[in-house]
Image (cartoon, rainbow, N blue to C red; front, side, top):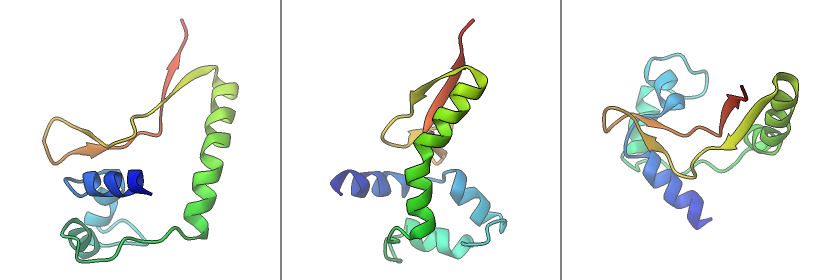
Length: 101
């Protein structure tokens, strides 16, 4: 669980893709204040619920299906969020997909 704790702390250093939807009011599950509270460590870390567990378990199966269907070569994303052009921009890609030519 230490890796997850490190990852969560790294995510608090900026905004990632799921944060953007919440900040813009486009998420059904979180709003701008939820993001702010999370970044300031004012809210408890969310325990993995059934939907989150299902997504985590099925992630590899969906990625493998995509690779087989498209011929893409998949590479694991980095274990920690990566910074974008601005220090507050973060991304956590699960996979990178390339096509062999």
